[in-house]
Image 1 (tube, rainbow, N blue to C red):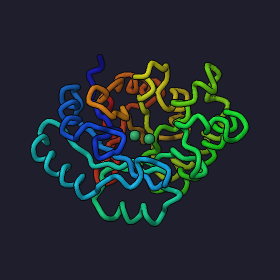
Image 2 (cartoon, protein in one colour):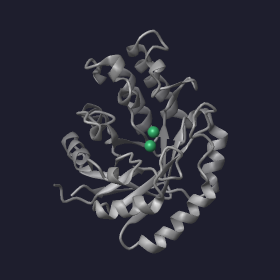
Image 3 (cartoon, rainbow, N blue to C red):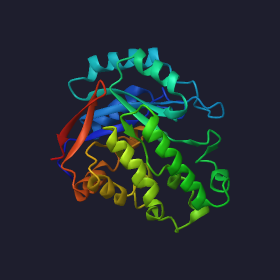
Image 4 (cartoon, rainbow, N blue to C red):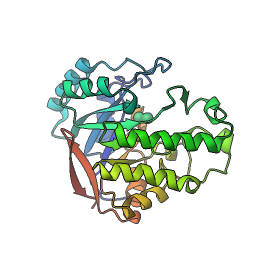
Length: 272
Ligand SMILES: [Zn+2]
Ligand SMILES: [Zn+2]
């Protein structure tokens, strides 16, 4: 067990279409799990084929955030976040949404490649001929998001690895796309943005989070300093899950600090 300041910067509540648990249940779970600071990063999607699209009710969310800050604020720091899908494809809409409220934290996510292929669909892994090419296309579009989208932290850098095991079995090795991923990281660093260690795969029994430890090493060695950790929880028992492992990976890569955000301004806090 790591005696650390625990922060969970990727959490969903029933303000996301794919989560059934109200914010208060997630808050109570966070307090029970010993989490000190949480960011609720609800899905903001505009793709017509995505069942979560246009679901996030911003005014109701802000009401809940403010009410729960009053009730639980002394036990848990609650950050108002949003997880935007493909912000580089919806620049004007995103700008309006981000200006309408004093968001603390913005995740930028690539879920739909070419606006057509979601990586959770098996067809993504055959859409471009073979699964290796699908991954390459993913990382190339991620370069576009990293360079042009509005976000603070780039989510789950190797997101397709969560879903494609039927296609790639044990053959997935992120080192095959090192040049493409280093270009993503170069854009992130040049713009003063960051990446996350997303522990979702660990709770499914995988060995590595999104992205694997090797990418966290590349990122640090290239000069990346803004790093968050998050469970991507969609249920109370997932809140805070495997953050200790994420902290260990961060430390092994060279990080002594993690980033937290208030009104989209980062503050680095010591890991220990
Ligand atoms: Zn996501
Ligand atoms: Zn998420």
